[in-house]
Length: 233
Image (cartoon, rainbow, N blue to C red; front, side, top):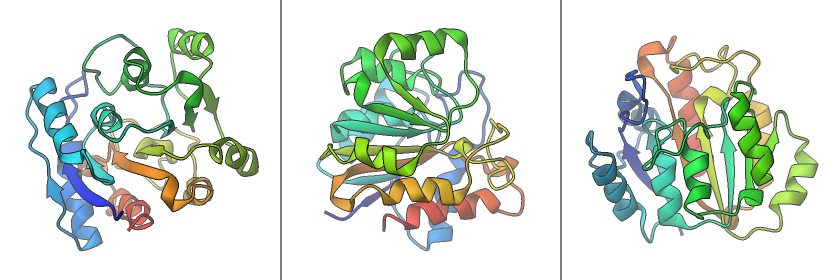
């Protein structure tokens, strides 16, 4: 099944009110030279999540956000066995439901959408003590800079994998266009090498989130996001 491009210009999942990611889907799709199917969003979290689930149901979505809170609804729709979660943050702060972009992992676990031990967070380097305690309690894998061969051994046992890529997993030198720049991030080769370990038929969905064109420099982040998306097309 081919990927269906979903544009999800939702940014109300940021509790600070920071703007920018809603502008990204159109610009990334323009860079790719494709249109994509736009999902209707609003400030109503529950309505937006319903719209995302309806748009993704029965499809293999490649979703362009938007903030990282959209992953919750996309996981609900695609029903993966495992989650590869590329992010500079752990996103398991509080028990909000629907979750903000700070609470996605916690919501996925609390709703029993994926077994905690089948979630792998990659590239996290800024987090709170309570988040580390949550990861330890639930035996969630968190890998700062993974050994690709070791990660492949973990991934190979799954038939249905969802890949969620927050652009802030990358170093700000190559991805300045985000509201949450965190130094010492991954480079393109590191992320690409990980994605290459996943067989195409294993992937049930992908999202690329948290690109903020207002923060970008010379379109570097838009081009990077488009380059990642193109891998799946």
